Image 1: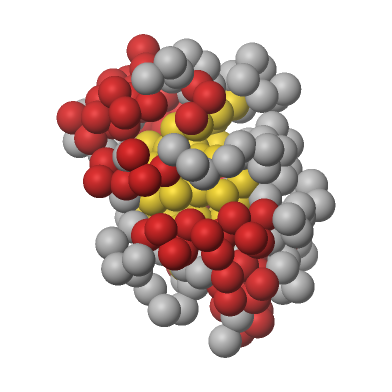
Image 2: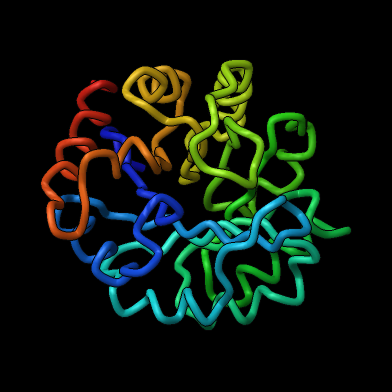
Length: 224
């Protein structure tokens, strides 16, 4: 894990007509991870990308392709998204009947296994699957849309999860409402990966990518 938080720009806030170039310029500006929000219109009230889109993005992503599966049932789609080139596949506890089996399937498919925890979901089950997890994603908004307000009650959950993780090599990721105001609160609570959409993309574009770099550095500097 990194002492300086990893900023993982969410392409949900990018130009949908130019994803390949958006990934390229984000990485040129310093992004090491690209976060891909997969939504099915069923588990969450929005529809975004399928495995074909992830496969199309893969050649444009030099670093980590962090794929967040907000879909149910999730088990039948694990292999397809793994084959699309995902480095990390993050699943929700509510997205299948047997969490342990789902995480095993992610690992068997050759990906790192992430577990996403919604705002109203507790963490009492986490110790039972810690040995299968490479990443825990704390949802600090309700999943389904970008641009929502940060839910401050989740800071206690982040602290508790950091205590459970201990010295295990598990990334603790925050997804939702990450800004220069909320990012330092998350890092102080124990997070080391910050998914950020509008706060990275504001003021920039493929034609003018410099603001992307400024915004990412501002988020990291706020956490110093």
